[in-house]
Image (cartoon, rainbow, N blue to C red; front, side, top):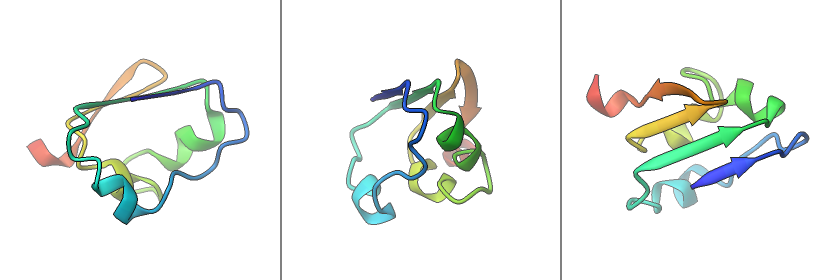
Length: 68
């Protein structure tokens, strides 16, 4: 799944809805400055995406805690 060029996007959908997306293997967030900060490890949105194995924010790989 990819989210691109959403300058004002600050939140993803609810944690419950995001965790229903169990088949997602990769999430790419690109050029979304507000969301970028909130999706880093230990930030507000991290709990919503941490179940996704491969997470990329502005092309930088962010490892999910599944493998830690």
